[in-house]
Length: 285
Image (tube, rainbow, N blue to C red; front, side, top):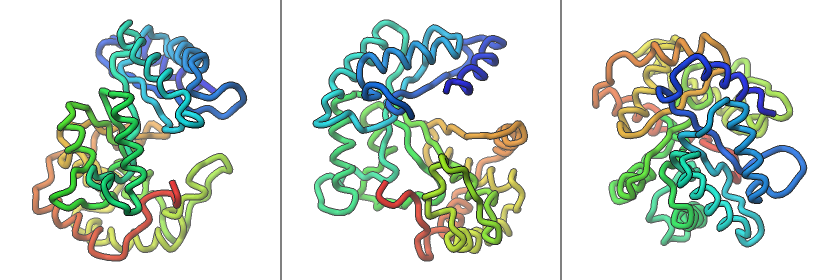
């Protein structure tokens, strides 16, 4: 309901606005009213965001959802509106979501990822974004040499990449122990996420054992491994790391340390990708 934006706005009043990069997103809300991509709704959300943040522009504005109404009836209008905001300098860059798993070649096939790849390519062509955001971490699938993943695709098109969930929502830093599976509030999407069940947590805990033994088992040690692997996989991308308290901010900032050696990254990936696959996303998402 805007509280997080207002809290962030308090911080922005204490710093040089040009020294930070602020992004927000549109396309989803819990409530009544027109479709989230109805032009009036976009304008309302955008104006509210600027007011809450106390700024007169956003560096990146993301189209958060790929649902543009029946037969994409709101797609053209949303694209026109965001491009207009960019032309006016109210938005510096336009962003959109990429699939959790994607290879460009899948669009020509009939596998599980074909429809999602076709949909993404269609929206990418229509939206013409400056940035894409993608879930990427050590549990993300490995791609064949002849497959064009989202990072190679973005480089070819001159588009930036913002990585999210590099810590696997805490799964990769030992925050959720299999002997004490987490419980979440009813509105938390993780309540239906199979990765947080006791059995997947136990499997991941066991797979992570050699990584904990090699690099350490503290939050800082494991965050170092997870973030370094993401940054070194895509050194031209940015990583957005979430936090829920000040201690997590401190850990995320101080954990980076020295780069991992290529052999270490190979060993880390081998530990997580040579055994039965762990769920990486919501069923049917």
